[in-house]
Length: 513
Image (cartoon, rainbow, N blue to C red):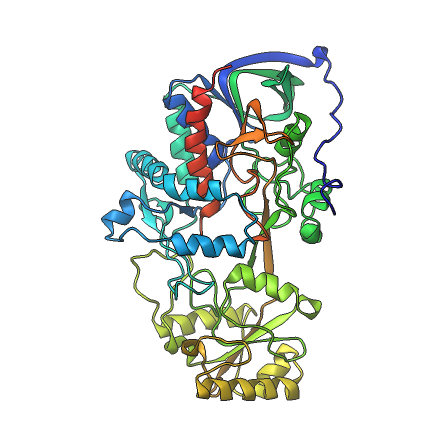
């Protein structure tokens, strides 16, 4: 699809008759959506003195997971973690994204995230919560599994796992926003932006039971409406290669974890109808997580052997869960398998997903217990001999055994001329019991991107000129990711929601018509 075919203009929706608009609200700043980005923006604007109103189709704040990235924070300082030199890492990420991302946004995130995170830390601590550092993949910094420290999680005193407490952050922000005099209009699904000349001045909202209301914004409207993964039309146009993995969702604005489509892109369409251009990066990046079975690192790895359905090795196994999903999809029938022996639990330091950075390594006996529980659920297979395991996995035994023999030879040589796997991770598969699993499971969480935005989060037209009075924050911001959201910066999505929400609230509060 060329650029002309990707033109972003959409026919405007039918005019809503004034007779169907039954109410009117006014504010200086109107934020559409009540996730982390919307709440951070609204509270930040209110703290600057702007009369701020949130309009949301949901009944309560909405979020999933809870990993929030910041390049540094007072929590990291308290734990004795030095400031990281991330210059090379960021360049690696640009390369992984084909240098198709907006570098201004990336550097602004890394440069300003400490300020935003410390703001959130102070708020959550005052509300009785705490912020900890989530465990991440500590590995060779040049490895695609490596993740820099900085993934924060809000936890309560009785929270066992890190990375699942986004609702603690949302409750804190909402309570602070209301206490500061902010207002929330719930069950009000925004459906159209109104303009005077070129400036966005109002949002029309569809109420659950009473028609429409008009919400006037004297300074700014900030869209924070999530993704478009539940819109077949937008998926086919802007993320066609992954459209088959999502199905249309309904009007559930309170959706939690879902892997078949979250939102219908109503904020994206409102922006386009108001004259926005689409992001330059095409297609949009998908947020996907592949199998982490048998991974000794929290966000995925596998140091055993991977084979496709033909029993042939097909990759360097040094990759995280997201890259596991993408490489597996490209094998015949989208199928792949991993095989290892019992010594794997003892050969490397194990860290669990959802753990905290201060936790000790997971001992081998705990790893074996985890494997046994996964065997009971059918996720893993264990056999005393390799031929039995390969047969149970459905692999061609003769070919797969030859693949394993060759792989074992490379392990003993300490060198992998085939796929150049690091010598430290070349572990032979020789001593039973043997373990194996399918790597074909994959979870498609979201689609990232949307309207073209500058680094001030102003939504821009085809000439890259900001549309006066219109901003966006959250996962709909354009040109932050290309290819896939690869989880090399765990919590980067929420980190961007927090940081850009916090900064955009200040921008919107300072906006003057």
